Image (cartoon, one colour):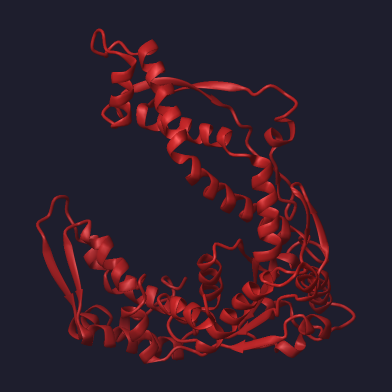
Length: 427
């Protein structure tokens, strides 16, 4: 897609913030341009990493996440502060690259599963039919395997019970803080015989389990890992949030030492190095890094110069005003008002939002962000939950259809000034 098309796609989910959308759209297009160059030229061109500066809840993470989703790129969000929680520096920053590769593995696996989905389900149906013939006493006398396969395939026997053997996977062993976990099954799986256990499940669940097993057999795991490494290396996006929390003037002691230590640990990853993973080596030179932070107390210039130099594109995101809140409530495909309509429709409540009701909610959100903490669009979740609290609570099973209109009067009646204690709703 062209940068303008990318921005148009992002506009479907994120209101405003044109400059940030424009910056990430250009970064994405540059990846496409790079992919069309010769191998020698490609190696010379690295991504122009981005720092997004702005208050919480204005769309920083969502822009990066939606961007990665557009091109099915491996996407990982990490918090810079995670690397200061343990000891002098904290978690090993290389962990983010390992995690990105795991995301890429799942992404490629899901694509390959879809390719073999139909064949895997056919084999699963055959296996279930054979189990039913051996185990079930409730089948009509003389039924053929072909007829039984047809019944299973049509999901007519979903609630019948069968006994199946499934692999007994050991639970992961937790390591001390910052060390992750070890799955003993994955370590010894190729050496020791697989331990199986019997379970009684419905035909429906047996089909799901067998389909997953057969999908694993039908895909080439070596090619999955190879493709995942390639995709993580060339298309990966790592979003480093809370970067402002590790910024600070250097000193000889105290927390600033740790902050600068984290920055210096992150530097080679962003600068470009080779990280060894269990699937193979991966170069970080071509991963797109998007850093983010409010930078209220600290400034971007408080980061060490070497790290600043690795994020040449600085984008400032705006705080949200009343007009932006109105658009957030009405325009995105996943608008919060639509979410509540769908939720309450389950209980036969037709929730309608009048224009003056939307305006009233936007006014309250803006007022609360100005008088309390500015938490951006997250404030709308707090207010909406407060407004529909009684509606959500006062429902009965099989109640008749009813329509409730959220207008200005309803908002004022259910969100009085004296009851605007939002602390319990703040996310």
